[in-house]
Image (cartoon, rainbow, N blue to C red; front, side, top):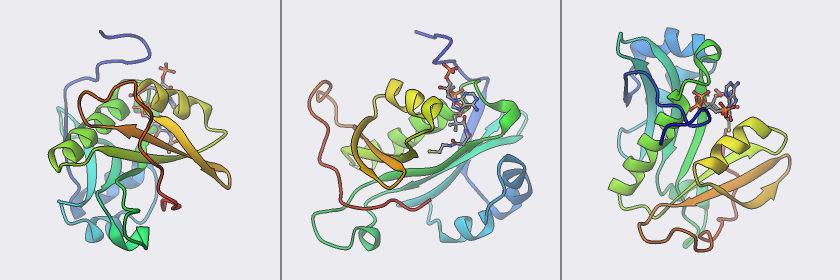
Length: 170
Ligand SMILES: CC(C)(COP(=O)(O)OP(=O)(O)OC[C@H]1O[C@@H](n2cnc3c(N)ncnc32)[C@H](O)[C@@H]1OP(=O)(O)O)[C@@H](O)C(=O)NCCC(=O)NCCS
């Protein structure tokens, strides 16, 4: 059901970012988008944009699946959403939720059973959004909270999967 806190976004498209998106991405939030796009492989490391039906890029996020180099040791692999941002004047319309859901679908399609996100512990608005979308706190590190959502079907209501002992990069 559509609610005020879970809006249905206007028509949109989610796709992998390309170098031509960099100016629009900078309008959302300035960062080294060009480097992030170069590092993405469109498979396990994806840098995604959400654009309106008119083709205006209004947000972005990074999905990293099973990144062994971050995890360091065997058995501690995990999948992360990070660098999530929607342009300030476009927030609150459902684009962020649409990006998260799309990334969850991509992770499921790749066979992942859980997704993690890091968020500053004082970022209450964002924490409440993630909680509504099914993410649960599984650990704290510095000023951040690590959240996890189990993706496998039939697992709703069970305890969250184990937390990796890592600090997801921003
Ligand atoms: C977090 C973010 C990506 C969500 O995108 P969005 O398109 O605004 O999200 P949606 O419209 O799908 O969901 C709206 C919910 O997001 C949350 N939210 C967080 N920051 C918000 C903001 N500045 N404006 C509006 N909603 C915000 C609210 O909980 C809101 O729910 P509400 O309408 O009940 O208050 C976006 O607000 C943003 O870029 N924030 C700044 C950067 C940031 O904090 N990124 C997360 C790092 S972990």
